[in-house]
Length: 128
Ligand SMILES: [Zn+2]
Ligand SMILES: [Zn+2]
Image 1: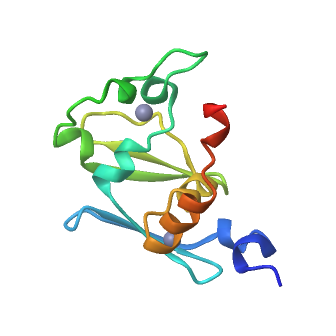
Image 2: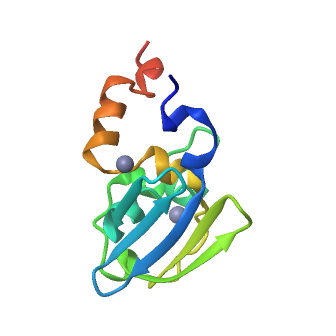
């Protein structure tokens, strides 16, 4: 039996996205019933943009393990990008990161998903 994670795209389709600025959390309810909660700091560290992550083999800003300021971890706006991603705007003005739903689901910080990542590490091939 395929699990809901592999059966279709339900697990990649948010039914609700809610940023709570007071609690500094981003909640995502998925169509398969799963719930994901990011705190803003965790979310900021996941920024997938070329500046943060680097490109063409060059390390990005986040690779230098910077100390993030409060402005850099305060979400001021969240825009939907088509049907596949959200683009947060941070209080320091950074807004170039498109977080795909796939990435948001794959990096879900809940214990269940943390355990799944631990048993199927996708970084393993880099070690060989
Ligand atoms: Zn970025
Ligand atoms: Zn999860």
